[in-house]
Amino acid sequence: MPPLRGPGVALRPWAPGVADGITLSRAWNDPDVVRWTTVPSDRSVEAARHWIAAEGERRAEGRAVDLVVSIPDDPDHVLGEVGFVLVEPERGWAEVGYWLFPEARGEGRATIALQLLSDWALHDLGVRRLFARANVANPRSGAVARRAGYDLAGELDGGVQVWVRDRPPPRS
Image (tube, rainbow, N blue to C red; front, top):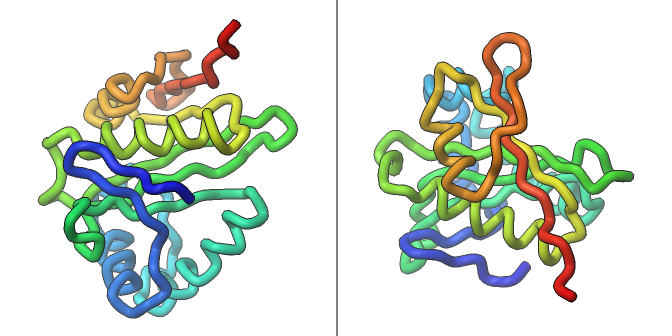
């Protein structure tokens, strides 16, 4: 994985040690993360450590990438996560997800993290289309996608917006 850095943001893989497991478990128990994303029913530190340990396998198989959003000069300071799951491998389509801890929200870091991940996935990993789902009751999530270069493709039942970003056409 190349270094993925932007203003005030760096992306790195989750580390299998105790600290990242504790941090991920804390995120899985954050009310906003629970409300707006998918988290496992077992939100314990042990479950988080197990999930982190399997991340390398998911990435190696090309199924998913999950990265810590951190501060460039302090990679152990976890601000949140950004990642994607390949949902239609034959078409190269993947769904992105992102969250930040409350203390890291509102400063544009989610947008920068999503831009970094999206650029890498679309230019270097063979992904052809990325999409994000954002509930209209969570307008900040849709705003992150829009600012990261995603276009609103439509709205599903239940007030879920679908945002799409495609691989740019090859240069002639």
